[in-house]
Length: 260
Image (tube, rainbow, N blue to C red; front, top):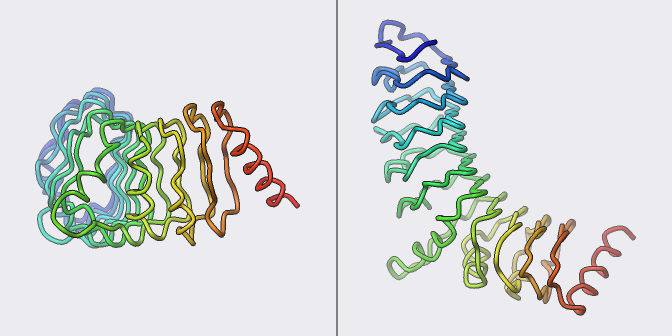
């Protein structure tokens, strides 16, 4: 029945704080953001949580989980380098934006933002997360054009050179988005593009030598698959009901190669 986590600086040696399913919790005190030995913070399913530390300096933190805190709208500012933080999950929250200070998370490897329906923007320096290998933005329809915005800023193209796994399912992607994705993520090994609105895969997909797993299921408007990456190992194109006969044959031939 906890509604407020009080001032907590009196326990400086705390390494794990688990508030999962405290469904009446509305506020977490600012002092939680300055526990230097905290390694893991969890607040899964705290649906009434609205007040969270506005800033954090958790130099030992490795994992931050705020999944399904549906009332939480603000992500804290990162004060200084927090290179030990490897995983952030904010699935199903009401968070509207990530701060530019997220660039201080030099060791971040996994970021999951599934079903963040209110998230409209990613910071302009998002590509500073050079350790990021796994990015999940499934069900974030307002983020569908974030790469277009990034590539239009300045003269250079932003690249996310170390991301290997990317989930963009149900993000409202259209044909113009796909070439940007394949150019900005040169080391992709697995990409989920299911449930989107593009009509054709670009031929530039052939220039993705690392891409092995491709998910296109439920892309109802997809008509053309002109080619595949050279090292493709698995493709899921179930319920792609608009595929042309030529693309269907190409897909079937590829499937035969997979299982031959």
